[in-house]
Amino acid sequence: MAILTILEVPDPRLRRISEPVAEVTDEIRALIADMFETMYDAPGIGLAAAQVDVPIRLLVMDLGDGPEDAEGNPGKNPRVFINPEILDPSEDFSVYNEGCLSVPGQYADVERPAVVRARWLDENGVAHDEVLDSLTATCLQHEMDHLDGILFIDHLSRLKRDMVLKKLEKARREKAGKKAA
Image 1 (cartoon, rainbow, N blue to C red):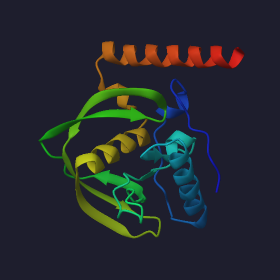
Image 2: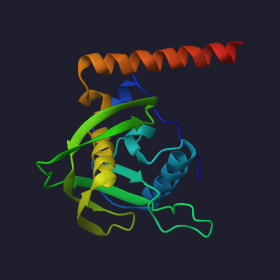
Image 3: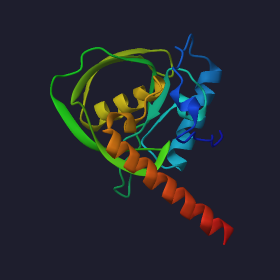
Image 4: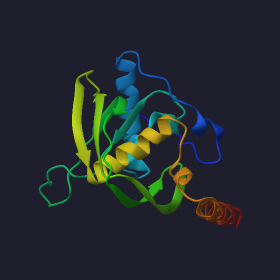
């Protein structure tokens, strides 16, 4: 397994439309393992293949909502979504304060359908069709946006988006200044 480089705004590769996965192969499973390692290292709760410069319709997520371990820590619950589709978004919306590994350290409230019915394949090529809600629905929609070249900041007003990007640029300058010192 390997830690992959996560693309960050304004990298134009983040705006590509991802292609469907034709077949779940050992190569795809190796990419999935690398994506989980990268996501956990970042740390994050979701990662789309497009964010690691592989424009295919694949994403991983782990909301840490698995069974607790012996010390009472939240358990891992890794989930793989290959060629995911949203079939039936609810008319009710929820707002989450979203962040993104491709827009590091920046957060903003984003409104999305609160409940979605989704269809996808897992890492074994098994088809799933489930109703998802809460953070699971939000995270899936956020990561699926990456597959279509959309970032969470695209859901913000121009003013809010510009503020987020200015904060990001300021943080990058400060980080570069510390490295130079």
